[in-house]
Amino acid sequence: MEGDFIKINEWLLPFSWLYGLGVRFRNFCYDVGLLKSRAFRVPVISVGNITVGGTGKTPHVEYLIRLFQGRNHVAVLSRGYKRKTHGFLMADESSTARDIGDEPYQMKRKFPGLTIAVDKKRVRGINTLATQDDSLDVILLDDAFQHRQVKPGINILLVDYHRLIIYDKLLPAGRLREPLKGKDRANVVIITKCPKDLKPMEFRVITKTMRLYPYQQLYFTTFDYDTPQPVFPQEKAESLSSLHDLENHHVLLLTGIASPRQIKEDFEQAINCHLTVMSFPDHHHFRWKDIARINSEFAAIPSPKTIITTEKDAARLIHVNGLSDEVRSHIYAMPVRVNFMLDQEEKFNEYIKGYVLKNSRNSILAKGKDDHKSHDSHRTGNRPGTISFRNN
Image (tube, rainbow, N blue to C red):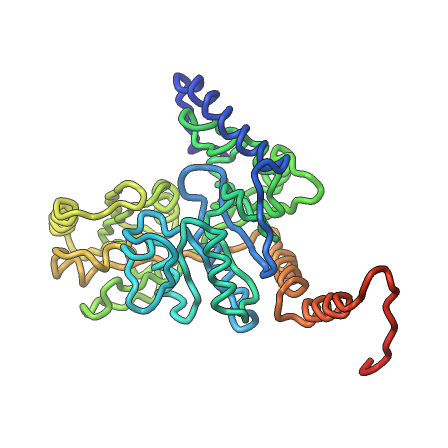
């Protein structure tokens, strides 16, 4: 059921109250203009959350990338969480997860031709991208809902079905980064990781309890898992045609993500196998003792056997040393795709594409606006402009 992963540490609630004071004051300063939010000429779409931990940001950003592919010139700007570099950095073929972070590296591997940059200072990052490439149609901001210095054209808030923000508490008692009022900044709210068999009544209950404004759109998504791909294809791993090739296998599920419980339950429901779970903290940096543990754990599992990991973990594992030959030849990453429920996909797609069409610097509509502004700029004082029928 919704909110079933929530655990509140009641004894920490006084500290949550103090934390909330600071966050409310910061948001108040932005709301009244004491702190400035900056809008940009290039369309900017932000995808983020107000909770600590995974809500499915990367799969939803990848959904948007696919939506724009072949139609618009898109760039992704991320903070590059836990990267070992600093400042603005453009990803290229030689970039690693240590250079640009797990998620940007994952996206760069899946979309090699995509423009991806990382910068902790998002305003600087957007300006740099827009200056370096004036053909950009849209910039996607990964995990930037709390980055109030940027005022995106569309603000997408992701909410985990299993950790609905309406039942959660502020840090450190719960996992909310800011009070519930923060959701009012969203143009789009997406309830993610929904069970595929969600009942109509549950949709209605969640819609009512979220208490959104008329200007906000609410969507529901679930995850689909694509065919697992070998992490080390050069190691001659067996090809899999689907997850069902792992029926009756012994599977080691290896994760270093914020919410491994969901993928475990999804995996158990998808196939009948003997599942062993090995979990590490989110964005975990695998050290030699972790590698040794993975090697020994997998060696102890009877055949036929396979290791399944997430794409985010694969982005880090691909660069570590010490994995046994047996592990390298049996480890697969499981791609995740977003699937909209209630036949909402077309409505969402048209909303996003419509925004970019109207606001892109390179669209016909945008050029029309710019031409109009350029004609107006030649007027002096209050003299009325002349009307020209040339080329009309």
